[in-house]
Amino acid sequence: MNQMEFKGKVALVTGASRGIGRAIAIELAKNGASIAINYHSDIKSAKETQKLVNKAGVKSEIFKADVSKQKDIKNLIKNTEKKLGPIDLLVTNAGIAMLSKNPLELDYDIWKKTMATNVDGTLLPIKEVLPGMIKRKFGRIVCISSVAGLGLRPNMITYGTSKAAVIALVRNLSSAVAPHVRINSVAPGLIETDMIQALDKKARKTIVETTPLKRIGKPQDIANTVCYLLSEKSDFTTGQTLVTDGGRVPLP
Image (cartoon, rainbow, N blue to C red; front, side, top):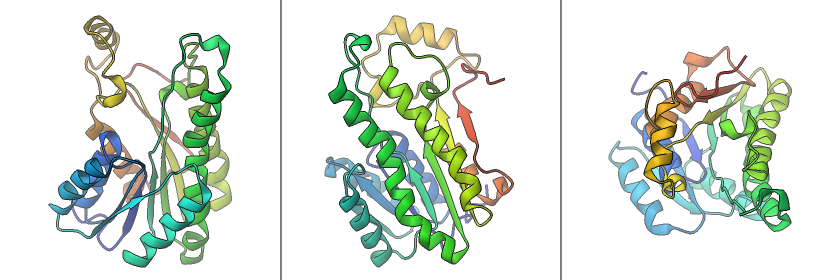
C-alpha cells in the first residue's frame, strides 16, 4: 500500500487503546492519516497508543467515550472534528466478550451489556458521522465483527449474536449510503489479544493445528485488512464481510 494512502484524511478508531484497535490506529498513521484514538477507561494504554501513532509524524488526539452511550458518541465526534477536522475514515472496533458458565442461562445482564457495546457501539458512531460523509460525498467505514457471527457458537450465544448483528447492519446499510460512502466489516478469527490470554497451551495447540495457515492471528493481520478496505484498492467493495482467520472458517 502507498505509504501516503490516507494523507489529509482524518480517521477515528474506537477501542484503540490496545490490541486490534491500537494496531489499526498505528497502520493508518503510517499511511498518513490523522488519528482520533478512542478509549473507554484505560488512559495509560491510550497514551501508549498515541505515542506509537505519533512516531509516524501525524496529528493525533485521545478521546474518552463509552461507545454504548449516545451522548458520549456525540461529544466524541464533535471534539474529533473540532481538533482534527471532518472524519473521513471510521473504524468501529470497540467490543466486549462476556462469557457465562452456563450459556443456556442466557444471562440477561450479559446480553444487555454485550449488545450495548457491540451493536449500539457500532451503530452510534456510524449514525453520527454519516450526515457529514454524505454531504461531503466521501466516507469509508469498517466495522470489526467476528467469525463468531458467521458460524455456530453454542458456547458464545450472546457474543455470536451481537457480531452477526454487526455483519447484518453493514450489509443492509451499504446500499443505503452508496455510492459515495462505502462500509464493510472484518471478521477476525482468534487473534493474539488480551481476550485470549486465558487459553491454556493445549487449547492453543489445538487451534493452531486446525488452522490451515498454522498460527494464531496477530493484530497487525487485522490492521492490514482494515486498511485495505478503507483504501481505494477496494473501491468496488461495499457491504461485505472479509474473514481474516487463517482459513478456519471457510465460507460457501
